[in-house]
Image (cartoon, rainbow, N blue to C red):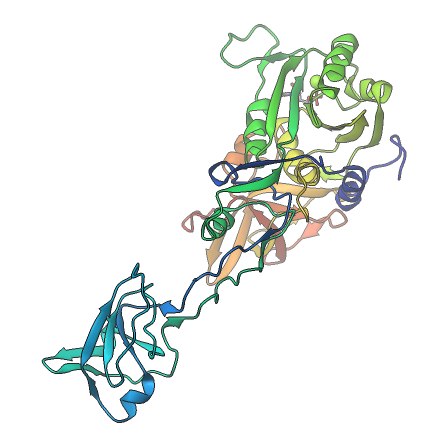
Length: 414
Ligand code: AMP
Ligand code: MG
């Protein structure tokens, strides 16, 4: 582990250190499925029932015993079976049963022929296509067999997981408790939006953006508002936070300016494990602990605060929350539309526009890459991730991009 004063850590090393020093908040609660979206399962869940509970039809059509079709091309229709029928009916040999999707397969039937391949007439039903045995049927337990593990401890619950649990008749789930994240904006120049700006002030915007980013992770946020660049106030507020939160995220005041007191205060109250990560935007990122509280100090520049929260704080939150395996952003390859030169040394997350052309992703960095300009993020639809060591990039070269969303406007070209 490098000392807090040694040179910058690579992004990978910083992530490795933060995760090694962060432990899951090992407390759980049982909550209704309707409130469980994005929460992390605290236990495995074992299937109490088979899905489907009986062999049933996957189609609206006709249930038959397929061997009956070798001798007859027309079968009389003996019965109709609807979904929700309580009894399993028997199929008289040499007949077909009209059957609906989800209805139990009659005893004696082994196959369902879809309605679109059936022609009904006065004396029964004829089929235009002879199916193979078992077609269009769903065997008992073929989705889930009673006793299967259907949810593993440490899984973040997606809409699909909730649906799967509901298909088992389950109404509640044991999850890790919500972690409490304290949010503190530091800076003498900051003014709360909604109030008139005084001379020398700017609006405090980091808390709004970071709260929204963290909301996607399902944490409880405790707001500490704007804290002045003053050692006593910072000491008092951070001490208060250390007894109320699992993680404190501060913005601003972690650089080397005369008013940057956050790091020394953490150093006094607890430990700063490392400081400065070789990423751009976002170099002055501090990670430490005060008692049981984890501390992440991100820079004040809005884009730096935003990027470091996504790249460095999110995995820490996931670990605290009990996620079995921390996630990383989706990275895909795209071709650069323009050549690019920059100073090497830091992994760069340039704001860029990706678009599809001739079956390939292409990417154009936005002209303004200032870390104070939040519109560079709202105008972009991806980060162009430039590796730390490389300084020159050619047009048409393959590069890595991190899309902001899984749904993208395909007409968005630059
Ligand atoms: P600092 O990291 O404290 O040196 O701040 C770097 C820059 O970010 C300065 O121009 C600050 O005014 C600005 N800044 C700091 N905190 C915020 C915030 N919460 N919202 C908007 N801008 C901020
Ligand atoms: Mg400041």
